Image (tube, rainbow, N blue to C red; front, side, top):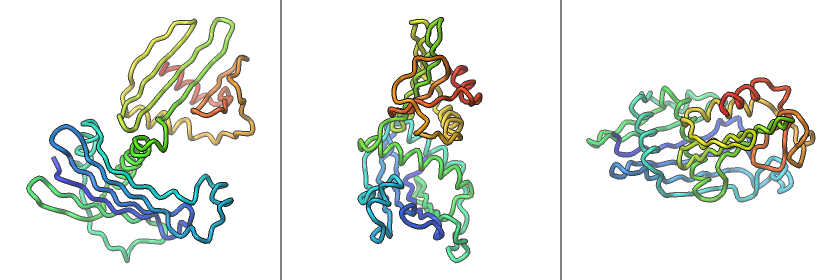
Length: 245
């Protein structure tokens, strides 16, 4: 078990505002019950960007974010597992290319021994930290859990698959309804990565979406907004959701 972890991250120098950001993150296990988290995210160099341009890119003038609180044992276990398989390499900022992100991780063991450097498995860190940041946005009420509804209207009855994934709880709940009969179950958390990568591999066009739940035959996907997308042509999506359901 680790005593605490501190992370400093900054996007590559080549990434301009409004996309550039940096964050500091500190996490520590509290007893054997939960993971204490302290996060601060800053988006620099936006003063010269018009509000309309920021909005067009999906940002606002006040996207900086700070949160501290705690998550349950499942998050403590996830972080401990990552720390256990991490090897830190010596970090030399001068050797970073303009397209390289800056990662600095400081790990403190239970005996007080501290190591600082760049994690060799930085992609694993990147993925887990993005999940953790999403969990903080969810806990702060800035974002909702991930929601997905898939329907296949048909003469013999609709098939409906609903998935709700909470990053704060690291849980996935599935409800399948067919011919008026419903069943529910939970899915392993690792399932979410393959679900989201399959879904977001497609660049859906909102202008081609239906704004009401379709009743005509086909395969339709809703991602928690008013848009329903025709996913009939995307066999990877339909096959995955039928199998899950």
